[in-house]
Length: 124
Ligand SMILES: [Zn+2]
Image (cartoon, rainbow, N blue to C red):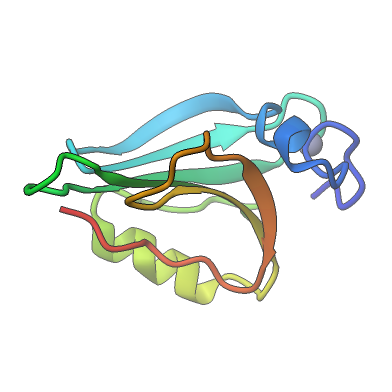
């Protein structure tokens, strides 16, 4: 699926993260959002996973968004967290994009390409 797609796999994480277009919402909870997204240039799909961990004491919430490219084919039903986690566990070890804003971070978070398996991060 577009190993060298100049739109979603250029290696420039900010550029690549901007390539994806919404295809389908899978989970829409206040602290967990999962969407199936698609790169218009190569047709490849990815999961966009948003998680939020509320900081009840200081209001400095931790937020993370992952973009996890998927192999071609039907990703199946992704209507709950267990199914999404099962899909992530089945994926070949690969790279994914991450934008993480931990508690206490004062600069705007940026996208980075990370190696290895993606996991749903802790969330409320
Ligand atoms: Zn692409």
